[in-house]
Image (cartoon, rainbow, N blue to C red; front, side, top):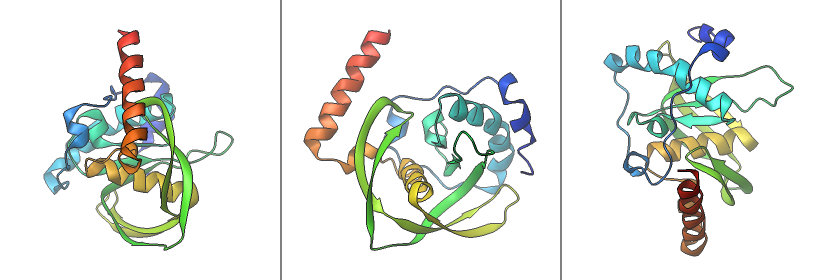
Amino acid sequence: MKNLEFLDRLDDIAPTSILVAPQPVLSQVARDVRPEDMAAIREALPGMFSAMYKAPGIGLAAPQVGISQRFVLVDVAREDEPRNPMVLINPEIIDSSETLAAREEGCLSLPNQYAEVIRPESIRVRYRDLEGQTIEQDASDLLATCIQHEIDHLDGILFVDHLSSLKRNMIMRRLAKEQKRRR
């Protein structure tokens, strides 16, 4: 993909640190990306892709690395498939199916924590790419879930915010306990 030629040498790129909940930036609404932000975004992408792939993960939102701007990385290709990286700038869901689907979700900012989340099964998303082109794309299944999950990050929402308060509190306590053990 144009502008992502660094993907061929990801092994040599240090991964950006991923923030773990409850970091304040993870619960804030990120601001829109402006044209003057693009150089800094292009500079951040190699470390962000390195972090996402090494985690391993299928999506990473800018707030997860401390950048409070509306852009996300997504790649839902399976291990046996070629990479299919996407950068979505100022993404917005413009349509979603009435049909819902439950899927187990995890998050790089809530390591080793998983829960079933119910979301629309398919969506239509509008975003800008790295060249500034506006793209509208239909997504379903895992890609739809991933895009919705990452856009939630831009709105200060974690996947656990879709759960009952009991389940959310259990996961957050378990995460805090694990983080304490790692220190």
